[in-house]
Each structure stands twice: as structure tokens, then as C-alpha cells.
Image (cartoon, rainbow, N blue to C red):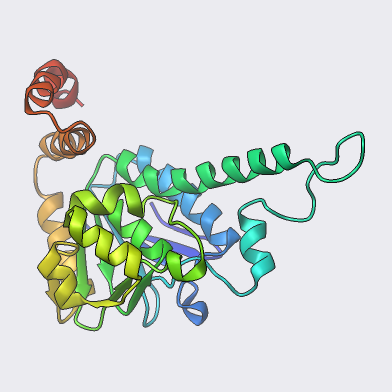
Length: 262
């Protein structure tokens, strides 16, 4: 797999390692509407590409991802479908119900972009340098393993923008760092360092060269049994969402033949 889109570049390294690079360095890789669609298309291709054994997600330039591109208030509302083009009722004026329905559909579409990372059967590694804010945190919490450089900074920024995070952080972060730490980060919107991120479990490693470390980890994972890796990822994600040991053991037993024959 190798492709270059307007905002996302994909390269297939030896050993079946897909390196996905968000490519808007002048905007710190902030996600605009074009990048949402490029990420969607890229992750869909990775879902079905049987040549890929592991995936790395990184950002071009100094920062991993600065969140949703908030160049203008109009742009933010436009991305959510909350623009001035709402359908009119027969009596004239905007239809509030249809506007809300359109906003909901747009949010669900954005949510699915990152949820697709969990549908990719191979391990997905986030390699973070510099800023990882807002939607950047949404993205990495949907990844399987997170590494960062010593200059990395993390922030769940949404409350400072007057909105509630709605693309996955509030759902995934507590299972990664715990309820208390998630409350702290999401309510205060404070910036934390890579070292604190490692201390609370948001990242596994703080690296001098995060790209090199991510590639070394990806190569190690790519050499393992793809059947065992896929089955392990599937069962762990299922256990996260359904945290019952008894049900999890039953699921593993019921899925044993299906998982191990893939």
C-alpha cells in the first residue's frame, strides 16, 4: 500500500509496515474537512489490505496534531454541519429539527473515522512529537500503542473551546489512564508533558527518536504470528467494551475457531 492524498501520505515500509503521515505541517497537522476525508479513505484501505502487518501514524513537521482546524468559527460550525444552509420549513425559516439531525449525522461520521482504527486488524502505533491536542488525543486513544518524543505535549482542549469532546476521547481515555486521571485532563484542559503522559499510562514509552522507536516496535510486531496478533487485538478491544471475565472467556472460546483461522 502506498498513496499520497492532499493531506495524508501513506508509505509501505519493508516487512509490511504502513506509515501514515498527516501532512499539513504549516497548520501543525490540524484536521480540516479535507483531512477528515483523507483519513477516512486511508483507514478504510488499511482495513482490507492483507499486505500490511502493522501501522504507524505520525505527523509531518514539529507537531503530531493540533486538533480540529479552528481557523474560523464558521469553519468549525461548517464541519459539524451547523451552517447557514439549513432546510427551510414551508412556513419559512430554518428547521431546527433538521439542523440538529444534520449535526448528529456529521458527528457520527467524524466519530467513525477514528473508530475505523479499531477495525484495522493489525496493531496501530501512534508516534507523537510536539503538540497532540483535541482531536489528536481522540486519534491516539483509538490506536493500540502510543509512543512519544520528549518534547510531546498533550491536551484535551475541548472545554476551553466551549464544547464537549465528542469524537472518542471521553469514551476511550478512561480505560487507558483511569477515571480520575481522565476527569482531571478533560475538565481542566491542562497541558501535560510526555513524562506525565507515560506516568499515567497514556503512552508506553518516551523516546529520543520516536519515529525510529515506532519503526523498531512495528518491525517486532510484524514478525509475530498475524493470526495471534489479530485475535489478541480483537479480544482485548471486546474486553474493554464488555469488562466481564466470564463473558470474555466465553467470547474467546466461541470465537476461537473464527479468530485463529483468519
